[in-house]
Length: 168
Image (cartoon, rainbow, N blue to C red; front, side, top):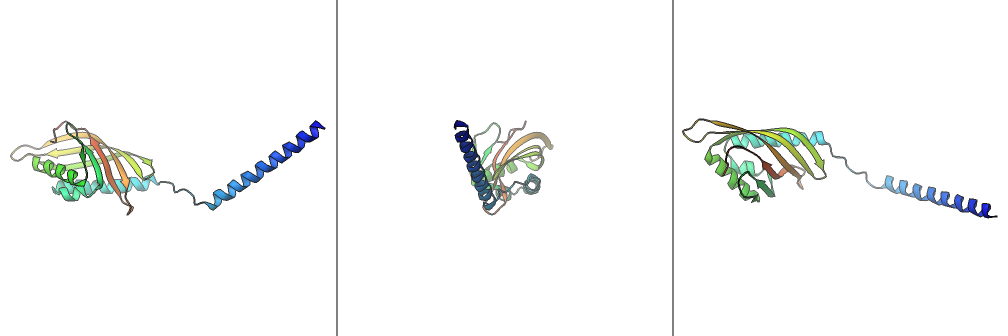
């Protein structure tokens, strides 16, 4: 008798499990699939933005350079206070151009995904030539947190780097 009751309960449990698993599967099929981030495409977008960054730096255009950042971006320059907001970013880079920044070449080493944000690790070569002086080349490294904006573009959100030259 106990064996019959055990078998009946076992069959009921298995049946309920199968029904609930099948319901979950049907539910999962009806839900929209999660979009998988295409890191190769994101990296290409970042590399294109880095080219624009370099072009803006070479032309000394702080406004164009700042437009590549989010409105609430943060700069974390070495040996300096944190700078917040696009206006602050623009003022920082305008000061850098006045100091003699002539060129910035950014090279992406790695991109890691985090939803609507990605992290880029890269190398930088900065050429500075203060008026009347020889050009100085500095080689550094950086980390940028990129944020996908409402219009689908990727913008710099947090930018931190190291350098041997004072950029204040």
